[in-house]
Length: 233
Length: 231
Image 1: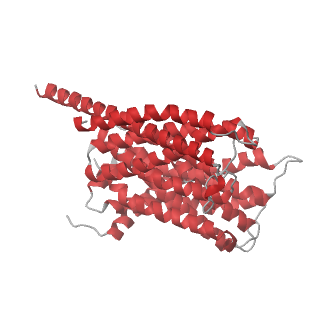
Image 2: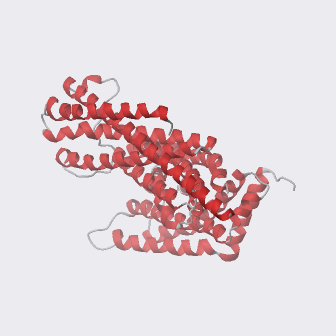
Image 3: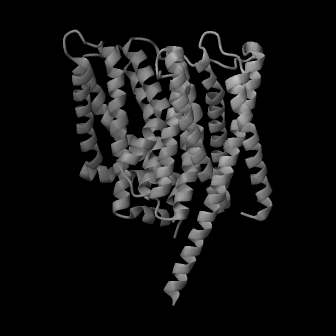
């Protein structure tokens, strides 16, 4: 990691620290209580942004995987590793907050619906991709296989979503096309603040993980060089 | 050494795989027995017993695709595992042929094996569960072929990845079955429609999905397969 990137991390850290209490305040105090669902609806302010940034992380995973395969620079692999892990984190968050909300709202913890299944499939595939990376004998092989899986996973998530949507549908449509005023203005503002804060958090986490991954790669490189020199003597 | 053309190389790799299968019946024998066991267990779990009888046309598509899905994982994993055990993948990689031809050849080998399995499995399911797709046998063959192609297209790529890290069926099923879930849904829906006596046109978009899925992963795999084999 070069020094010029440091201010970016600091900026991300500070803005996340500022935005987070704001998001909590707007979700828990500022936004009005929903009439039919009550307080439990407030999970929505964390559930939806977590889902959105999970897909953002998938986009980063796709991009860094493709670039890695062409450039073969391990820095891109470090980025895709960071994106995979952070995406897994937010996916888990979505899968935990979803049922907590669904039980009072739908009367059931889980239902086999498009977005639920595609998130679950994404979670399983991300875990499998991390497993492949870990099982690989050497770094380059793991990076290459993970990049191929990254591309496949990103393509797959969309198809899975479409398929299950046709199969059955129940998830509330928060943003219908051409119907922008479906959400109360205060709620929309709260959601917007939470969305911003979660995006900042996601970027910060990816950046931090990327930095540690860079350091890991460098120490691994030093260790290998040391061993090779030891063999030469 | 003379470079062999793409189609010829594909044919040689596929022929090699099928010849190996013909001589040992390694994959087919185990996957046929396995899928018969799936039919049996499914009948115990969902089919029989007074008062909890499911209609055959509701049961058969699910059972069929369950058996196909699971035994394809086993078959595809084993065919790639044979290469790993003999360390012949490295030999294939050094052969003066297009890397994508290795993929296509293995894909054809896997697809033919799966087709042979289905040739045995589908009549068995019809006999066991006493259900038939009416006059729509050709449509059924088409649906089976389409979805099996997609399953093999993705499965062949994944099996190469899995064999490179030295893991077998367990990791392949973790990867392949969730990733191929749209295809399984398409297969179950279309087969169900045929068994209920409906036309394929009524499930047209699933037809599109299965075709698109197969082609998408065929081309993704063609583009990325050489990175998997790379030393």
